[in-house]
Image 1: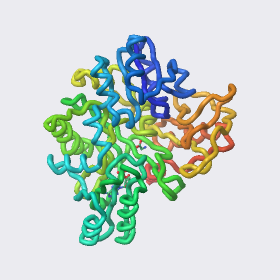
Image 2: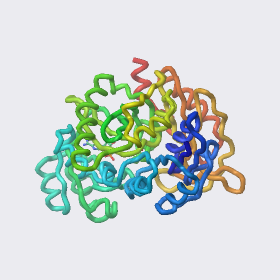
Image 3: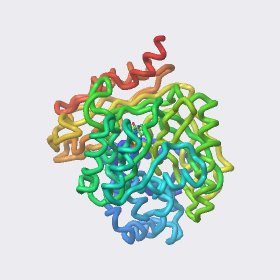
Length: 423
Ligand code: AMP
Ligand code: GLY
């Protein structure tokens, strides 16, 4: 099979590394890719926003299958255009990608099909939103409706904070994404991420993970795209996974199909495990980054036929086998991230991978023959272990061998799970 992978982050490096191990693979292309992905794929400098150019490339190279990594091309309808051109594609349609692209869309779906989630209201102007906040009281959660690069959510512990967040949204802090606001009940519990494939009819549960959104040790400082993650999430017991499938994933699949938007791709469900059970915080319609990296380390099965079955409506014919081991990833980021940071800082050395530990590239480039950091999140040092404690020790041992002066990482990724293992 000839495969084109769309994307250039650590998630796509992990996907490329795993797809490249498939005996079914004849040729792997990545657009635009990165220097880590180049170890497994031929990089193609395609403009992913130019759907006609992407389709022309797939025809020229007789590509059989396209795997879309990030959400932006999905929300822009790349999967629809590829499928219309007759190319099997992993990733939801533009209509189904609204599950990530519009929080109001997802909340309305939950309301229609009795999917457990926080009570909410949608607003197009500030005053009625503020009246609702005053009536509900704090803590309460204010969300810009659209894609806001993970920054559109305020968990307001006071009414004043909530009212200010409403003003921010309508004053344009998140551009068009904030033209509508969702006000949502605060959910109390432990967060977990759950990954599940669907071809529109069948669901295949993958695995669970927990991430670390805050930039600083002890979960302090501003939110980021994720400073590390581990899998499995201890709070997601087999019973909790079963409830999540029954109460959240299955009604989503049947509801989306009933509404004329059948979902094909991966559900990345952000869950709050409350006293009542699993409740949906949000859906993403692509693999998490860096959650994908820990999932790929733990997946024993060949990934390529699983993704292909998802795209071609034959998910009932495949299974996914997982290692019992835990996996943990530490993000090395440019000093200053998530604020301003220097670009093109040199990375002098990346240590060799082993069976148990590996460095994925997220924001790197080659410049004048040398490796440089180009992004905020730059490398993902990922390791397996019998326990999270062991995976953590291996990941930090490898991270400490990376030579990159402008890099930093959190030193406590996995702390909740490590504390649990000690108890
Ligand atoms: P989101 O971008 O929707 O994932 O929200 C970002 C973060 O805000 C989540 O990971 C949660 O930590 C928090 N959050 C979002 N919605 C709620 C809620 N209803 N109750 C409590 N925390 C929430
Ligand atoms: N790590 C969170 C995300 O991919 O959205």
